Picture 1: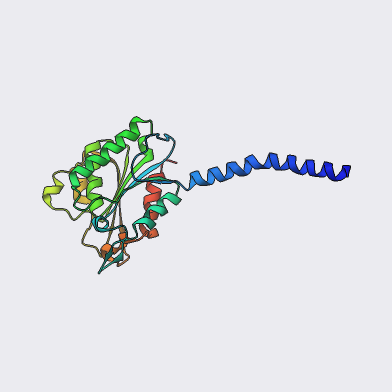
Picture 2: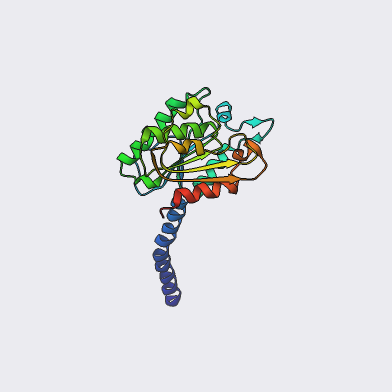
Length: 231
């Protein structure tokens, strides 16, 4: 009995030593998978990487809307993909008819909130798709910060009136699809006075505007790389 008792005690002690390590690993795993929020949190983790995702206009109609030409807009899948890459993802389903300029100011204000809380500007990325990219360009303009990251996806088909509102700042990545009407963002770069970095990627998926509807690696991977490049 004495031998059996000693063996059980040793096993119990070993379990106590191992348990914290297992718990720690699980905690790290959750942290690496990121979080999903609809707005900037009151208590900000200054060491986290924050990614704002501004969806296309069709999502104002429903959480998983469908287009006759392009199928379902997989909004939640896109958010989850960014979350799984370790970002604190800030995104909300906008109300139908949301004003582009007002929302651009709102996002700029949320970014300022993070910066004021001690988040380094290089740890903040604003990603916009289609109409969301118009808001992203305005947020870049209103914020006027040369170190924050911005990604413009399939959004540079705006008229000259909108062009006059935009003065890009920060590290800006443009992604467009060759078969889409929304082409190069070069005209927005020409008169920009606050760019620290600019890069443009042309895709060739032949999906026209529908390439933004799903978390395709063709555009997800460059966005993640852009947002993590300071690592």
